[in-house]
Image 1 (cartoon, rainbow, N blue to C red):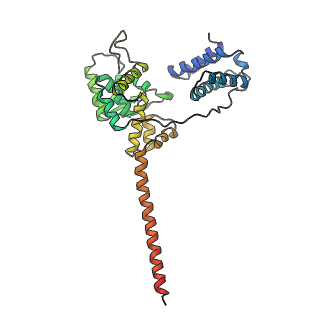
Image 2: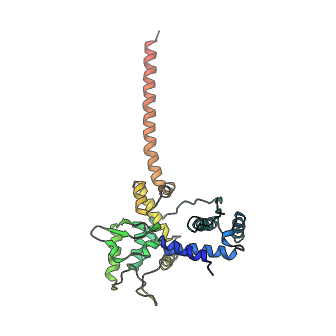
Image 3: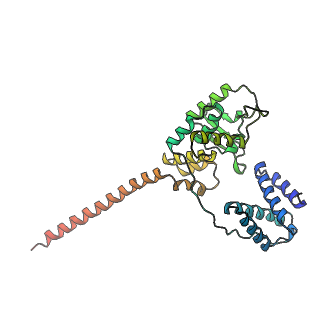
Length: 307
C-alpha cells in the first residue's frame, strides 16, 4: 500500500507531464524500496541506502539496475525536500557504482537485408522500416497517429517523445512505400497508426510489448540477434558513415545531449577509417614537402661550400 508521500509524488510526476511509462517505473522502484524499508521515509539515512544497495547486490541485480534504483530514490527525496518542505538531508548524495559502457550494437548491411527478407507482413514491415530509416524509438512508434504523417513533405511529426519533446523526422523512399502499402490494406478509421491485427484487441493501437514481440519473432526467424533499439542504432551508424553531421543525427534521434550521439563515433569504423586515410594523406604530403625543402637546402649548402 502506497504511503501518503508516494501518493503525492505520483500526482506531482503526472502534473509535470512525465510519461505513463516513466511514472510506472518510478513508482515500482519506490514500492520495492518501501517494502524493504523498516523506517519511515522521512527518517531514511545513508546507512539505510547502503544496506538497500547490499540487498540488491545479493539479489544479483546489475550495476545499471542498481544505479537506476538509486537515481529514482534520490529524485523522490529531492521532491520531499524541495517541494514538500521536509527538513532532512537527501540520503542518496552520491552514486559511485562503476557502470560498463557498452558500445551501441548495429546491424551490418547484409544483416539488414536478411532481416527484412523475412518481414512480409505489411504492418510489421512499415513499423521496423520507420525504426531503421527514421530512428524512432519503440514507444514513439506505438504512439503514432495517422495524421502525424505528411506524405507530400515526406516527414513524420513525433509528438511527446522521450523527455516530453516533439520533433520532426523524415521518410526515406522505402519507408514511405512500406507505410503506404500498409495503409492501403488497412480498412480501419482508427486514429492510431499501427493497430493490432488478431485476437480480442483487434483494431486497438499496438502496444510497446506487442512491437517487441514481433521483432523477437523475426529475430528467431532470421537467426539474428536484433532488437527494436538496434534498428535505431543502425540508422545512426549508417548516417555517420555517410558523412552526416553529428548535430544532424542528434536532432533526428531526439538526443538531449550531443555526448549521447557521440557514442556512435566509437562504432562507426568506416567513418573512422575514411577520416584516417584522408587525414594521414594530408600529413604525409606535408611531411614529404618539408623533406623536399630540407633536401634542396642541403644541396644548395653543399654547392655553395664545395671546395
